Image 1: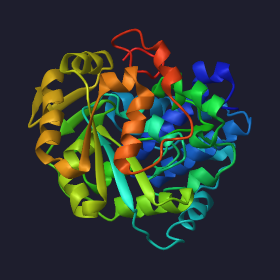
Image 2 (image 1 turned 180 degrees about the vertical axis):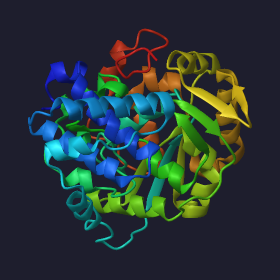
Image 3 (image 1 turned 60 degrees about the horizontal axis):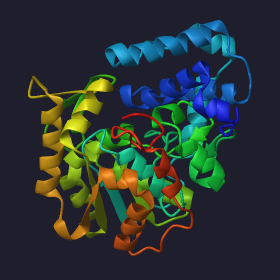
Length: 362
């Protein structure tokens, strides 16, 4: 199941996409680690070209539907466990043995990409992550055992691919690349972030009940960052989540002067239009927020709470039209040399003003 097959990149296998969705969003929508282990084992068997029986496929589809419709996961199907001969206790034990094996380390810097959802935060994240200069959370990362899956066979970290293959991956939209089990992409890791510093509840997929920031498992985020610094062998951590815009005070309490912020701003009307077309909905204090009001909430919070001396404000349109210049600007601001690989070739496809630069219309 190579992630480098162009056909697979552009048209992922539906079963593989379902397995990836079950695992990635299962981390967010349940605290039950048996679901995590089951999803990971099924995905690994898929990667090894081992056929999954009809009962297992049905279970995966039921979990995907439940997340999308109700924001919950059904009980694990014991027949699936028996049919595929999974010892869940042994699987959980193997994962737990990998925890906290290395000392806690502090990042030299934490670079947080913030901004309203659908503002280009993910595209900026990918372009900065691709050159291997930063540690980051991934689509294979799990809040319960942060880097376990990164060591497993059959997975390819996108920033360790050849420049040509990276370019092919970045020509495809992010929802598609997340649907390829073998391909490990940068990820917002809200399963970790919102457990550590909750700013919303999640009644179902793509629906967010926003609330005032409050502390959760506050040790989870720094420990998970430390684990990824060890895995990548780096000291600078790059993170992206629009919802970190609402966590700036907590990030400041955690890391203070180590924090750097990249605030990307997209036009309100274009952002609102994208939120509507992707069916992303927000509520606050019991009432629905219009897409325009949601944009204003994120933008106003960023402008109010970002420390001026440690924040760089970027334009969505500049990122789309002049990606290399934008990345060079960021690198210079961070005191880093320019990346070795360029990004301007990606700008040629950006003709539609609604285009995100991720190979699809925003």
